[in-house]
Structure formats: structure tokens, C-alpha cells
Image (cartoon, rainbow, N blue to C red; front, side, top):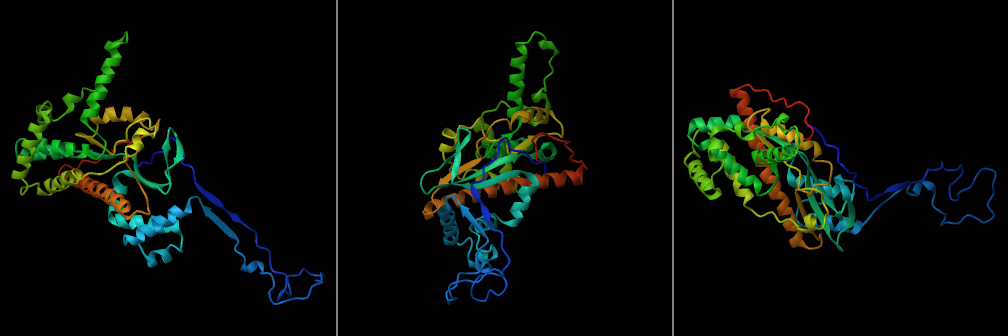
Length: 379
């Protein structure tokens, strides 16, 4: 997976440890500290000063440490971690909180997401405010999920297979998946490519040599079943798609339809996000896309994305998910944990489907996915 350098560095709010160089103990230091050749005037007594061997040689300080410990206590209350985790983390509050959150997500899901997309989950006491970091309200933390590199779904071969199984089934699958993902995340698909093509045509109209420009012709690159339904009304399209998918949920491609149903169900569960992250954050653009959806390996949609992605990291983008909470309030802690859990669950279903499509295509067509060196794609 291709990593993306962030456009601005994140500041480290933890002070660096202060280290003291340990001096070797002097000889004949049974009860008092003395250097060779020097005699102390005062007699030795039982409560001698501690030797350097008993003095800590490293110190650390966490800014707003009480919030970190409140978060750890909240994770314990929700039974996400306990004494065993605390001991394993060598009584480090930072490591304890991180380990508990990762344990909540699960190792298999972390590996699945890591293979397909680049997400960054952050718990912090600061938020973006007009390009700078600002402290949140008293006793508040924020959990955010940001996208640093998009996943990739080539859906064309699956659409063709579904259309061969039943007329209109491929289009029904595509539109249902598209509308479900629109509810919870930003994706880049034919809609974005068509909008980019339109902007390029408007720009070319103002140029003297406009006839020399070449455009991607996105609509012509779409499968025939998608072209036929491109101008349909949302309600009519979704109602027909739901009925058609229901008639084939026990058929040849029932595994795909089952995962699609799970994605649609999870997308209808409300994921609360604080408006303050968008209204007060001073972000330059909407969230970066979590998924690029194309029909062929290097089609017009992929070409438009490669052009637009060159500028996606120039400014600050909104987080995909942002929720503020107080670790001292159990109801707010449960709300934020539920929000993250639903987001992760939906993405897990999505990228299981992505990998199932890729495996099916490999078995049936032997297509090798080689997308070169894209500027933003994580595939």
C-alpha cells in the first residue's frame, strides 16, 4: 500500500524525557557518599541521603495527563481492558489506551483495512482551527478518523457477471452499493469523473485553442446497463433495485448480495459527527475519498481521479469522522465507541467484498491488478 505524506506535520504535545547521567557510586559508600581523599566533618547517621542508584534517571510529562487517565478509566469501565493489559503495557497510560482501542477493533479487521485503505484514528485534546491546533473544551477529547490513501474497487467484471445472470441485476447492485456508501463516506466514482469532465470543458471554452483539448468521455466508458439507468430518478431506481436483488439473494452470487445487504444496513445506522469539526475547523476541502470505484483497470474514471488526486493533499481535508466526548461521562464514551464500531464494521464488509471481487476475477479472468504508481491510491 502506498503511503501518503501529510501536507502538514502534527505537533507532539508530549514533553521529551529529561535524562540524568548516572554517576558511578564512590568507593566505601556504605552509609554516606564520599569522594576519595575527603573526610566529612559531620558523623554518619542512619538517615543518609539516597545513593544515585536509587534515584530515577528519566522523567516524562504528558500535557493534560488527567484526560488520558480518565480515558483509560473509561475503557476499563466499558470492559475493553483491565489489569492484564495494564501490566502488559508496563503501566504506560498511552500504551494502555492504544492497546485497548486496537483490541476493540480486532486484529483481523485491522489487517483487512491495512491491506486495502489507509485510515488514521486519533484521540486528542486538540482540534483543527483554521490551520492550527486549538485546545478543546474543558475535559473534552475528540476522536477522528482520516483517510490518507484511498482503496480501489474495479467493479466492471462483477457487474458484467451479474448482468449475465439476470438482466438489470448488475445495475441494481451498483446503484445500491453507491447510495449506501454515499451515506457514510466519500468515494470517487462516475459522478465525480463526470463533474471533472464538465469543469474541464467549461475551462476549455475560455481558451483560444479549445479544439486542441481532449476530454475523457466518461459516460461512453460506463457499462451499457449503467448508461441506461444513469438518468433515472433515485426513488424509482432504488425501489426496482431492491426488488431485483431480493429475487436473487439465494442465487449464484448470493455471497455478494449478502455483503451488499450488510453494507446497506450498516449505512442506515446513524453515525453522529460533530458539526463543529466542519464549521469551525477551517478545513480547505471535504474528506479525501476512501474508495475509488472504476469499471476497468485504466478507464476514464481512473484517469480523472489520477488528475484530481494530484491536488487533493495541497490543503487540509476534513476528517472522515469526528466526534467530541468527555471521558468522564459514560454515555458519551459509549456513543463514541459505538460510532467507531459501526464505521469499522461497514468498512470491513466493504473491503471483504472488494477482496472477494478481486479473487473471483483472478479465478475467472486471470487479470493482474497493476495500477502503476498513482499519486493518491492506496491499492
